[in-house]
Amino acid sequence: MSIGLIALLDDIAGLAKVAAASIDDVTAQAGKAGVKAAGIVIDDAAVTPRYVVGFSASRELPIIGKITLGSLKNKLLYLLPAALILSLAAPWAITPLLMIGGAYLCYEGSEKVFEAILPHQAHHHEATVAAAAQTAQNLEDEKVNGAIKTDFILSAEIMAIALATVPDLSFWSQAVVLAVVGIGITLVVYGGVALIVKADDAGVALAANDRPVSGWLRDGEPSAADRALAPLTKALGRGLVKGMPIFLKGLGIVGTAAMVWVGGGIIIHGLEAFGFATLGHAVHDVAAAAGHAVPALSGLTEWLVSAAASGMFGLVIGALLIPLVQYVVAPLVKRLRGSGRKAAEHP
Image (cartoon, rainbow, N blue to C red; front, side, top):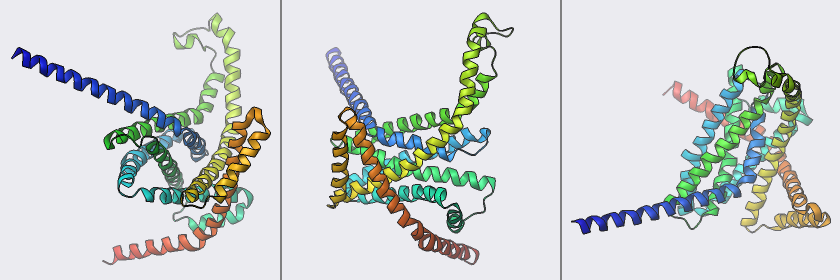
Protein backbone atom coordinates (compact mmCIF):
# COMPACT_ATOMS: atom_id res chain seq x y z
CA MET A 1 0.00 0.00 0.00
CA SER A 2 2.72 2.48 1.00
CA ILE A 3 4.82 1.63 -2.10
CA GLY A 4 1.76 2.09 -4.33
CA LEU A 5 1.02 5.44 -2.68
CA ILE A 6 4.61 6.59 -3.20
CA ALA A 7 4.42 5.55 -6.86
CA LEU A 8 1.12 7.42 -7.25
CA LEU A 9 2.58 10.54 -5.65
CA ASP A 10 5.61 10.25 -7.91
CA ASP A 11 3.34 10.07 -10.96
CA ILE A 12 1.38 13.10 -9.75
CA ALA A 13 4.62 15.02 -9.24
CA GLY A 14 5.72 14.10 -12.76
CA LEU A 15 2.41 15.27 -14.20
CA ALA A 16 2.69 18.51 -12.23
CA LYS A 17 6.17 19.13 -13.67
CA VAL A 18 4.88 18.50 -17.20
CA ALA A 19 1.94 20.83 -16.58
CA ALA A 20 4.22 23.52 -15.18
CA ALA A 21 6.52 23.19 -18.20
CA SER A 22 3.50 23.46 -20.50
CA ILE A 23 2.32 26.60 -18.69
CA ASP A 24 5.78 28.12 -18.97
CA ASP A 25 5.88 27.24 -22.67
CA VAL A 26 2.44 28.74 -23.32
CA THR A 27 3.39 31.89 -21.38
CA ALA A 28 6.61 32.25 -23.37
CA GLN A 29 4.79 31.67 -26.66
CA ALA A 30 2.09 34.19 -25.70
CA GLY A 31 4.78 36.76 -24.96
CA LYS A 32 6.47 36.02 -28.29
CA ALA A 33 3.18 36.29 -30.16
CA GLY A 34 2.35 39.56 -28.38
CA VAL A 35 5.68 41.07 -29.40
CA LYS A 36 5.09 40.01 -33.02
CA ALA A 37 1.72 41.78 -32.96
CA ALA A 38 3.11 44.95 -31.32
CA GLY A 39 2.91 46.98 -34.54
CA ILE A 40 -0.82 46.38 -34.89
CA VAL A 41 -1.27 47.11 -31.17
CA ILE A 42 0.25 50.56 -31.67
CA ASP A 43 -2.02 51.15 -34.65
CA ASP A 44 -5.02 50.05 -32.58
CA ALA A 45 -4.10 52.46 -29.79
CA ALA A 46 -3.69 55.28 -32.31
CA VAL A 47 -7.01 54.62 -34.05
CA THR A 48 -9.33 54.26 -31.04
CA PRO A 49 -9.19 57.70 -29.31
CA ARG A 50 -10.70 59.40 -32.37
CA TYR A 51 -13.98 57.59 -31.64
CA VAL A 52 -14.21 59.21 -28.18
CA VAL A 53 -13.30 62.79 -29.13
CA GLY A 54 -16.28 65.16 -29.15
CA PHE A 55 -18.26 63.58 -26.31
CA SER A 56 -18.73 65.00 -22.83
CA ALA A 57 -16.21 63.94 -20.17
CA SER A 58 -18.88 61.90 -18.38
CA ARG A 59 -19.40 59.71 -21.46
CA GLU A 60 -15.74 59.07 -22.30
CA LEU A 61 -15.07 56.15 -19.93
CA PRO A 62 -18.48 54.48 -20.54
CA ILE A 63 -17.80 54.62 -24.29
CA ILE A 64 -14.31 53.15 -23.82
CA GLY A 65 -15.87 50.46 -21.63
CA LYS A 66 -18.34 49.54 -24.39
CA ILE A 67 -15.56 49.41 -26.98
CA THR A 68 -13.37 47.31 -24.65
CA LEU A 69 -16.20 44.81 -24.10
CA GLY A 70 -16.80 44.69 -27.85
CA SER A 71 -13.08 44.12 -28.45
CA LEU A 72 -12.98 41.21 -26.00
CA LYS A 73 -16.04 39.69 -27.70
CA ASN A 74 -14.38 40.15 -31.08
CA LYS A 75 -11.24 38.32 -29.98
CA LEU A 76 -12.57 35.61 -27.67
CA LEU A 77 -16.03 34.76 -29.04
CA TYR A 78 -15.54 35.26 -32.78
CA LEU A 79 -11.94 35.53 -33.92
CA LEU A 80 -10.30 32.96 -31.64
CA PRO A 81 -12.54 30.02 -32.61
CA ALA A 82 -12.71 31.22 -36.22
CA ALA A 83 -8.91 31.41 -36.47
CA LEU A 84 -8.45 27.93 -35.01
CA ILE A 85 -11.19 26.38 -37.16
CA LEU A 86 -9.96 28.04 -40.35
CA SER A 87 -6.35 27.04 -39.62
CA LEU A 88 -7.51 23.41 -39.44
CA ALA A 89 -10.27 23.28 -42.07
CA ALA A 90 -9.62 26.11 -44.55
CA PRO A 91 -6.28 27.86 -44.02
CA TRP A 92 -6.53 29.24 -47.56
CA ALA A 93 -9.51 31.41 -46.46
CA ILE A 94 -7.58 33.40 -43.84
CA THR A 95 -5.72 35.62 -46.31
CA PRO A 96 -8.73 36.70 -48.44
CA LEU A 97 -10.76 37.38 -45.30
CA LEU A 98 -7.96 39.57 -43.95
CA MET A 99 -7.82 41.36 -47.31
CA ILE A 100 -11.54 42.13 -47.11
CA GLY A 101 -10.93 43.55 -43.65
CA GLY A 102 -8.01 45.55 -44.99
CA ALA A 103 -10.27 47.01 -47.69
CA TYR A 104 -12.71 48.09 -44.97
CA LEU A 105 -9.91 49.90 -43.13
CA CYS A 106 -8.88 51.61 -46.38
CA TYR A 107 -12.48 52.73 -46.91
CA GLU A 108 -12.82 54.08 -43.35
CA GLY A 109 -9.53 55.95 -43.49
CA SER A 110 -10.12 57.34 -46.98
CA GLU A 111 -13.59 58.48 -45.92
CA LYS A 112 -12.00 60.62 -43.18
CA VAL A 113 -9.54 62.11 -45.67
CA PHE A 114 -12.45 62.77 -48.06
CA GLU A 115 -14.31 64.53 -45.24
CA ALA A 116 -11.30 66.76 -44.50
CA ILE A 117 -10.73 67.72 -48.15
CA LEU A 118 -14.32 67.93 -49.47
CA PRO A 119 -16.62 68.29 -46.43
CA HIS A 120 -19.78 69.09 -48.44
CA GLN A 121 -19.49 66.03 -50.67
CA ALA A 122 -18.51 63.92 -47.65
CA HIS A 123 -21.65 65.07 -45.82
CA HIS A 124 -23.76 63.98 -48.80
CA HIS A 125 -21.97 60.62 -48.79
CA GLU A 126 -22.64 60.18 -45.07
CA ALA A 127 -26.31 61.11 -45.53
CA THR A 128 -26.62 58.49 -48.25
CA VAL A 129 -24.86 55.76 -46.29
CA ALA A 130 -26.27 56.48 -42.81
CA ALA A 131 -29.39 54.58 -41.86
CA ALA A 132 -30.56 56.47 -38.75
CA ALA A 133 -31.21 60.05 -37.69
CA GLN A 134 -28.33 61.61 -35.76
CA THR A 135 -29.68 61.88 -32.23
CA ALA A 136 -27.14 62.02 -29.41
CA GLN A 137 -27.69 58.33 -28.60
CA ASN A 138 -27.52 57.32 -32.25
CA LEU A 139 -24.27 59.24 -32.65
CA GLU A 140 -22.75 57.50 -29.63
CA ASP A 141 -23.97 54.09 -30.79
CA GLU A 142 -22.61 54.78 -34.27
CA LYS A 143 -19.21 55.76 -32.88
CA VAL A 144 -19.06 52.68 -30.65
CA ASN A 145 -20.12 50.35 -33.47
CA GLY A 146 -17.59 51.95 -35.82
CA ALA A 147 -14.82 51.50 -33.26
CA ILE A 148 -15.78 47.86 -32.66
CA LYS A 149 -15.85 47.16 -36.42
CA THR A 150 -12.42 48.72 -36.84
CA ASP A 151 -11.17 46.82 -33.80
CA PHE A 152 -12.48 43.60 -35.36
CA ILE A 153 -10.22 44.05 -38.39
CA LEU A 154 -7.18 45.01 -36.33
CA SER A 155 -7.89 42.18 -33.89
CA ALA A 156 -8.15 39.72 -36.78
CA GLU A 157 -4.69 40.79 -37.90
CA ILE A 158 -3.38 40.44 -34.33
CA MET A 159 -4.86 36.96 -33.95
CA ALA A 160 -3.56 35.87 -37.36
CA ILE A 161 -0.04 37.05 -36.45
CA ALA A 162 -0.26 35.36 -33.06
CA LEU A 163 -1.46 32.10 -34.61
CA ALA A 164 1.31 32.16 -37.22
CA THR A 165 3.84 32.55 -34.39
CA VAL A 166 2.83 29.27 -32.68
CA PRO A 167 2.24 26.76 -35.50
CA ASP A 168 3.86 23.85 -33.61
CA LEU A 169 1.73 24.02 -30.45
CA SER A 170 -1.24 21.74 -29.89
CA PHE A 171 -4.77 22.93 -30.67
CA TRP A 172 -5.59 23.75 -27.04
CA SER A 173 -2.23 25.39 -26.40
CA GLN A 174 -2.81 27.60 -29.43
CA ALA A 175 -6.24 28.48 -28.05
CA VAL A 176 -4.73 29.47 -24.69
CA VAL A 177 -2.00 31.55 -26.37
CA LEU A 178 -4.56 33.39 -28.52
CA ALA A 179 -6.77 34.02 -25.48
CA VAL A 180 -3.85 35.35 -23.40
CA VAL A 181 -2.65 37.56 -26.25
CA GLY A 182 -6.17 38.81 -26.97
CA ILE A 183 -7.00 39.69 -23.36
CA GLY A 184 -3.59 41.19 -22.65
CA ILE A 185 -3.53 43.35 -25.76
CA THR A 186 -7.10 44.55 -25.20
CA LEU A 187 -6.35 45.64 -21.63
CA VAL A 188 -3.13 47.38 -22.65
CA VAL A 189 -4.70 49.19 -25.62
CA TYR A 190 -7.90 50.37 -23.99
CA GLY A 191 -6.26 51.04 -20.63
CA GLY A 192 -3.86 53.31 -22.50
CA VAL A 193 -6.73 54.92 -24.41
CA ALA A 194 -8.56 55.62 -21.13
CA LEU A 195 -5.46 57.31 -19.72
CA ILE A 196 -5.08 59.41 -22.87
CA VAL A 197 -8.66 60.68 -23.01
CA LYS A 198 -8.80 61.44 -19.27
CA ALA A 199 -5.41 63.19 -19.16
CA ASP A 200 -7.05 66.61 -19.55
CA ASP A 201 -9.29 65.94 -16.52
CA ALA A 202 -6.19 65.00 -14.55
CA GLY A 203 -4.64 68.26 -15.74
CA VAL A 204 -7.60 70.26 -14.42
CA ALA A 205 -7.27 68.54 -11.03
CA LEU A 206 -3.52 69.20 -10.87
CA ALA A 207 -3.90 72.84 -11.92
CA ALA A 208 -6.42 73.46 -9.12
CA ASN A 209 -4.60 71.54 -6.38
CA ASP A 210 -2.68 73.61 -3.81
CA ARG A 211 -1.74 70.52 -1.77
CA PRO A 212 -0.21 67.94 -4.16
CA VAL A 213 1.63 66.16 -1.31
CA SER A 214 -0.37 66.48 1.90
CA GLY A 215 -3.72 66.34 0.10
CA TRP A 216 -3.28 62.57 -0.15
CA LEU A 217 -2.72 62.26 3.61
CA ARG A 218 -4.64 64.85 5.62
CA ASP A 219 -6.77 68.00 5.55
CA GLY A 220 -5.46 71.41 6.52
CA GLU A 221 -3.11 74.08 5.30
CA PRO A 222 -0.51 73.37 2.59
CA SER A 223 2.78 72.06 3.92
CA ALA A 224 6.27 73.23 2.95
CA ALA A 225 6.46 70.34 0.46
CA ASP A 226 3.12 71.42 -1.01
CA ARG A 227 4.33 74.99 -1.47
CA ALA A 228 7.52 73.75 -3.11
CA LEU A 229 5.84 71.32 -5.51
CA ALA A 230 2.54 73.10 -6.23
CA PRO A 231 4.01 75.46 -8.88
CA LEU A 232 5.41 72.45 -10.76
CA THR A 233 2.24 70.33 -10.53
CA LYS A 234 0.04 73.29 -11.47
CA ALA A 235 2.24 74.04 -14.47
CA LEU A 236 2.04 70.37 -15.48
CA GLY A 237 -1.74 70.46 -15.12
CA ARG A 238 -2.06 73.60 -17.24
CA GLY A 239 0.21 71.99 -19.82
CA LEU A 240 -2.01 68.90 -19.98
CA VAL A 241 -5.18 70.99 -20.29
CA LYS A 242 -3.74 73.07 -23.14
CA GLY A 243 -1.78 70.29 -24.81
CA MET A 244 -4.20 67.35 -24.81
CA PRO A 245 -6.65 68.77 -27.41
CA ILE A 246 -3.70 69.30 -29.76
CA PHE A 247 -2.34 65.84 -28.93
CA LEU A 248 -5.73 64.18 -29.51
CA LYS A 249 -6.15 65.99 -32.82
CA GLY A 250 -2.71 64.80 -33.89
CA LEU A 251 -3.52 61.29 -32.67
CA GLY A 252 -6.71 61.37 -34.73
CA ILE A 253 -4.65 62.17 -37.83
CA VAL A 254 -2.23 59.35 -36.98
CA GLY A 255 -5.20 57.03 -36.43
CA THR A 256 -6.62 57.84 -39.85
CA ALA A 257 -3.20 57.30 -41.42
CA ALA A 258 -2.88 54.01 -39.52
CA MET A 259 -6.14 52.79 -41.04
CA VAL A 260 -4.96 53.31 -44.60
CA TRP A 261 -1.39 52.06 -44.11
CA VAL A 262 -2.50 48.96 -42.19
CA GLY A 263 -5.31 48.27 -44.65
CA GLY A 264 -3.06 48.87 -47.65
CA GLY A 265 -0.34 46.72 -46.13
CA ILE A 266 -2.75 43.84 -45.49
CA ILE A 267 -3.90 43.92 -49.13
CA ILE A 268 -0.33 44.14 -50.47
CA HIS A 269 0.78 41.15 -48.36
CA GLY A 270 -2.35 39.27 -49.43
CA LEU A 271 -1.58 39.87 -53.08
CA GLU A 272 1.93 38.51 -52.49
CA ALA A 273 0.45 35.37 -50.96
CA PHE A 274 -1.58 34.85 -54.16
CA GLY A 275 1.45 35.31 -56.39
CA PHE A 276 1.03 38.99 -57.27
CA ALA A 277 4.26 40.12 -55.67
CA THR A 278 5.28 42.99 -57.97
CA LEU A 279 3.79 45.73 -55.82
CA GLY A 280 5.11 44.22 -52.59
CA HIS A 281 8.60 43.86 -54.03
CA ALA A 282 8.52 47.44 -55.32
CA VAL A 283 7.57 48.78 -51.88
CA HIS A 284 10.29 46.68 -50.24
CA ASP A 285 12.94 47.82 -52.74
CA VAL A 286 12.07 51.52 -52.37
CA ALA A 287 12.04 51.22 -48.57
CA ALA A 288 15.38 49.36 -48.57
CA ALA A 289 16.95 51.99 -50.85
CA ALA A 290 15.72 54.77 -48.56
CA GLY A 291 17.13 52.92 -45.54
CA HIS A 292 20.53 52.59 -47.20
CA ALA A 293 20.50 56.32 -47.93
CA VAL A 294 20.16 57.08 -44.19
CA PRO A 295 22.35 54.45 -42.48
CA ALA A 296 22.03 56.00 -39.01
CA LEU A 297 18.22 55.61 -39.10
CA SER A 298 17.88 52.82 -41.64
CA GLY A 299 15.26 50.80 -39.75
CA LEU A 300 13.03 53.79 -39.01
CA THR A 301 13.44 55.12 -42.55
CA GLU A 302 12.51 51.78 -44.10
CA TRP A 303 9.43 51.55 -41.90
CA LEU A 304 8.31 55.11 -42.70
CA VAL A 305 8.74 54.64 -46.45
CA SER A 306 7.00 51.26 -46.38
CA ALA A 307 4.12 52.68 -44.30
CA ALA A 308 3.83 55.70 -46.62
CA ALA A 309 3.73 53.50 -49.73
CA SER A 310 1.16 51.17 -48.13
CA GLY A 311 -0.85 54.23 -47.08
CA MET A 312 -0.88 55.68 -50.59
CA PHE A 313 -2.04 52.34 -51.96
CA GLY A 314 -4.66 52.16 -49.20
CA LEU A 315 -5.92 55.64 -50.09
CA VAL A 316 -6.35 54.58 -53.72
CA ILE A 317 -8.29 51.46 -52.69
CA GLY A 318 -10.42 53.48 -50.27
CA ALA A 319 -11.10 56.18 -52.88
CA LEU A 320 -12.37 53.51 -55.26
CA LEU A 321 -14.57 52.00 -52.56
CA ILE A 322 -16.27 55.28 -51.52
CA PRO A 323 -18.46 55.60 -54.66
CA LEU A 324 -18.98 51.82 -54.71
CA VAL A 325 -20.36 51.93 -51.15
CA GLN A 326 -22.44 55.06 -51.84
CA TYR A 327 -24.04 54.03 -55.11
CA VAL A 328 -24.12 50.23 -54.90
CA VAL A 329 -23.65 48.80 -51.41
CA ALA A 330 -25.67 51.33 -49.36
CA PRO A 331 -28.77 51.28 -51.65
CA LEU A 332 -28.63 47.48 -51.75
CA VAL A 333 -28.42 47.24 -47.95
CA LYS A 334 -31.31 49.69 -47.52
CA ARG A 335 -33.40 47.75 -50.04
CA LEU A 336 -32.73 44.49 -48.21
CA ARG A 337 -33.58 46.09 -44.86
CA GLY A 338 -36.79 47.47 -46.33
CA SER A 339 -37.74 44.06 -47.69
CA GLY A 340 -37.01 42.46 -44.33
CA ARG A 341 -39.09 45.08 -42.50
CA LYS A 342 -42.03 44.58 -44.85
CA ALA A 343 -41.80 40.82 -44.43
CA ALA A 344 -41.86 41.24 -40.64
CA GLU A 345 -44.89 43.56 -40.81
CA HIS A 346 -46.81 41.30 -43.20
CA PRO A 347 -45.86 37.69 -42.41
